[in-house]
Length: 292
Image (cartoon, rainbow, N blue to C red; front, side, top):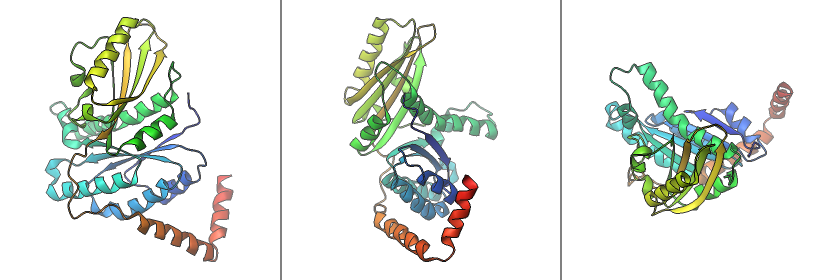
């Protein structure tokens, strides 16, 4: 169990206060930044702050949601550009389709209820990573495994948890969802973490492993973890993480990769001007007193 790791979650904007707090952390932690694409005014300052965060020891995941098609072509085009800009900066990219989320709703679902459901969808990969890192098991998966895994291959990530006592239908249908990437079985590598309750027998454990290996036969198994769910019953809880997932859209031809050097120069210039601005350290001292 790795309780030394803290998982942070930020939604839609990274303000200066949150950024400075995260940059003060002297140990390796994880930050999930959730972003719904489509608003061009949110891009420039966000990229600058995320670049500063990227330069720290924080392991940065982006959970990116594409807008609804009914919001217009221009908004979608902006989101596609933002997707690639954010992907160039972060350590791991996870993406969702808003239209697919809407397909999961029942008829006459209110906007409030829909947003609550969308929140659950976006929280799922965060919860999966949290449980994976904090579970004590027979074979543990730690943050160093995760970091190596996500930096091994280019491409986005697919994260999915499913559970039950028996899986009578094909695993592909249990794992897939209309708001998730469809090519999850085409990934380069995969992490599998299997939780089993007290009454799961070895044959059930063997069968689920065989079926997972068959479904992901094109992928290399990076690590297989397992842990006891200390409760009666024959429940299995399986979390999958695949890397090397293809992008949902083609990178726009005229779009270049994020020019990191620009943010590096801006960061160095800010530090230089801070050192030479009268009263700057007085402000910092006041903040430090406030914290302690």
